[in-house]
Length: 310
Image (cartoon, rainbow, N blue to C red; front, side, top):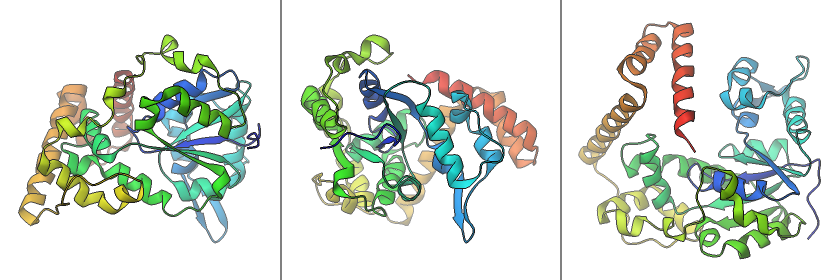
């Protein structure tokens, strides 16, 4: 298989909590790959109309991930050309193939970078759903699987040539690390490097732990699994996972209970993380239309959230 072009990005595409950061650290440990991390800003703030692609420049320039990368953008560059300019700027930061993590917007990704190679990273949504609770994104697994569904539903809308896509399962990566990393390197036209197995020596992540895969089998209740499978059963099966039982769809009363439970638990989580003044201050500023104050408080919340991540 031919090598990826040094001028074309490699996108690691997968839902949040699917192991994209862990894989990034492994790829970054290869001397032939540079991986500056998440790059969803490339697609979050751009839309297409009859006149072509257009960025919301204000939203783009406020994006905390873009700001952290300290990229210089020409004011006169717009639309698809600006997306290419940002990718080229990131590619110039270090030698090697450029690998970027993307969690959503698959159709935009393909439209703007049709020649890119894609590593499609999949993790069992029953584990992703439970992991989302720990991040404070949802208060139960029923709503915790939402972003996995969104990511994979978007993937249904693209059709890359087979030779441009490599599907990697998180569970296989954890169980057969060297084999899977060698397969990834082959896909990229590179040789495997043993340093990739030692990614944890230069990060806050620990050594690979196969036991973190398929935790839902011991941690999730039968009802919890049935509800998750009721939300994403067809997608789950299409991605090669086996349903554990009969999928369940909640009735109106149970759905209301799940919604309220999720909301309350998210509030509790955010109160613990941000404290009462910051959490309710930002909410009140939004309610009363104090946009400047709301944005300032949201930025402070974002700083706290980032500091809590690995």
